[in-house]
Amino acid sequence: MSSLPRVKAAASRIHLFNLSPAQGSQHKQKRLGRGQGSGRGGTSGKGHKGQKARAGNGKPKPGFEGGQTEITKLFPKKGFVNPNAKVYAAVNLDRIQAWIDQGRLESSPEKPITVRDLLLSGCIHDAKDGVKLLGDGAEELKTPIHITPARASKSAIQAVEKLGGTVFCKYYNDLALRDCLKGRTDRTEAAPARQPDILWYTDWNNRGYLSPQALAKMPPAITNPRWKELSKQLLAHKTQEYDRAK
Image (cartoon, rainbow, N blue to C red; front, side, top):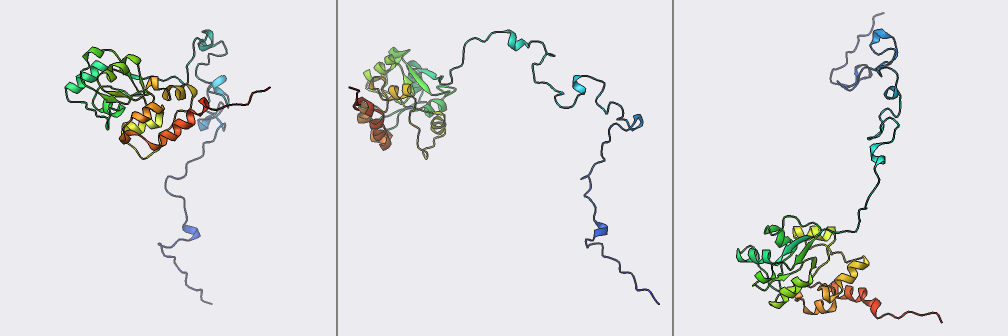
């Protein structure tokens, strides 16, 4: 009886007998504790006895000093960090006048000076949490300016308005300040939510942009229609009446 001829599989086809792992995908198993001849016998590559030779917490947290009191616990805590504190970039009136004289800044009622203009012109080097207008060098100010800082001192407001300029303090959170610096106008700006901010930006004495006097004097080009309704809502507590217990 003649045997059938053996069929030889083509090299391009995949069969069970020619399957193998990809090159470099497998590594030789590390066998520990199998005698000194293996190179990892006895202590299994962990050195001699001790804290760092144990499994689990072999690496304690930074600052651990073997169980004795850490140096970070030996000194008492002092002071605190206010999570609501803001750091403003201060800019004085004499500096703004110098930038105007050099032609690096210009303003008009329809296009006031913003924190973006101050940063791009080099008048400030870091916007931080906003710009605060200060009254130092008020005697050097000769040009009527129109500006929208985050805060302004009373002396700065008086000096600017004396020459026919305007100051309207505007609230910025982190996202709104970032959008202002990038020139983005496609997102709705956040409104003040904390009580101190609400009281500040709805007060005309601070030239807050949400005060009724400021909304009446601001040009339509820089006024958001949303601000009027927002001002009514934030100032509603002044006219509300509450039931008192008899």
